[in-house]
Length: 233
Image (cartoon, rainbow, N blue to C red):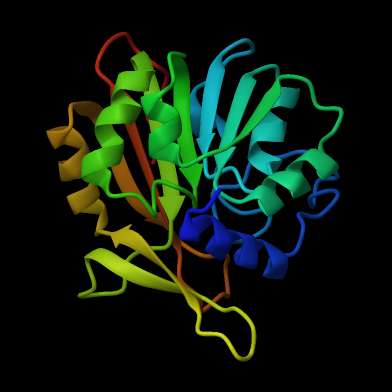
């Protein structure tokens, strides 16, 4: 794959530590929306049941998708980085119900004929893809009542819309640059509603007690249709 973004995310993969073997409760798989361990809501945000189909856009090393697969969901993970997917296959070789693909999220969705019960992205492709392009194809891939949810860092005040993220490379190399899209929660809610989503919620999860670092923006929306379960904050 020659996409320069895949090279950037391969570089990111080299610097990102692997997920811990167990969490604070001793679980070997778990769902984490935030950048902090053992913090925030879990997979219940997606309102899924065993047998449901779910798509992870920007699955990285596969921890969230593996957790859903262990709960009985049919989890598909898509990521641009071959190195991240290599970590996922090495870490989760025996997890049934998880299918991984190296692809751009838009490209995968455009050629996909599967209808998903939920689509999600944790600091993944939804952050790094123009929502004008992404939201319609996600909407088309969801069943009526299906959930789309994503998390990312909240925007820096005054820095909204398309921004630049810099990924460090070697000492003698300039950082890799990828685009990201940042909006305040109420703007995300408006954008999603404009693209046909309903029951939209968008809020910032506060960081762990005592932390001075930023919180996590969590957005959840539903494709209009039958009820999909309780709305999450």
